[in-house]
Image (cartoon, rainbow, N blue to C red; front, side, top):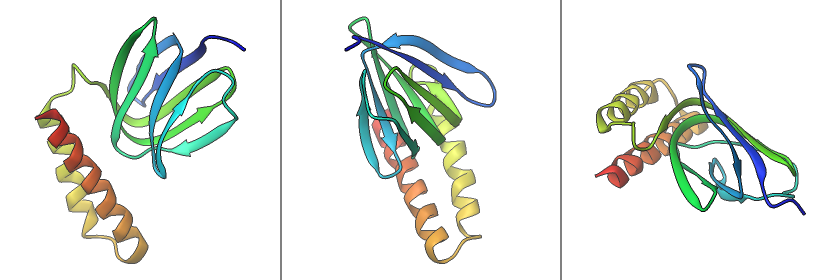
Length: 131
């Protein structure tokens, strides 16, 4: 069993991280999950939340909004619609994403409206965690 796995985080704007990690905590759409070396192959969509990467005994956090994660036995690749280093993101940036999501929510009904409501609630929770 390998002690580490390759971790990569990219967004449309840039590559945010590439490191050897011992574990990656992922805010999956169906619930949080932790990927470690030799994990079963999995693909999950992301919900807004904080992704945590443990590497060399230190934990680095990233805020991710949308996208998906692909987990293999040797790697975790996260393709996020929007991603920020936790220490670099501001409340104003998250508030702008929340405002845009609230405006789009009124365009939806039924199941899509439920998903939009959940997305907005996750963003509000992230703002609370940043306080």
